Length: 129
Image (tube, rainbow, N blue to C red):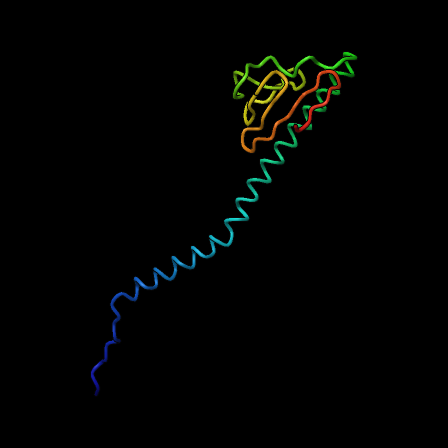
């Protein structure tokens, strides 16, 4: 009868397996990272379009009710928007409380991508400048 032979043990084999697994996870993550970032950019652009569309609609509603365009879109102070310093309150029921920066009375900037918007109170036009 032959004695039971023990399998040859490789020192560090488990460590090598862990390294290979980590590299594989890193490669998969690197493949999907651009898509994740692009999705975040698209989402912020969609939010921008929604706010701009609502502001334009609010301007049109104000004009329909008053036969004139609002002199300004809000009474907020210059600087960052906040819950205490809401923008577009003259044309939106609750205004906007994040994501925008007021440059001057009729100039606004979207915080994350530096798009500037101008409101012309003579024509009611609110557009990217």
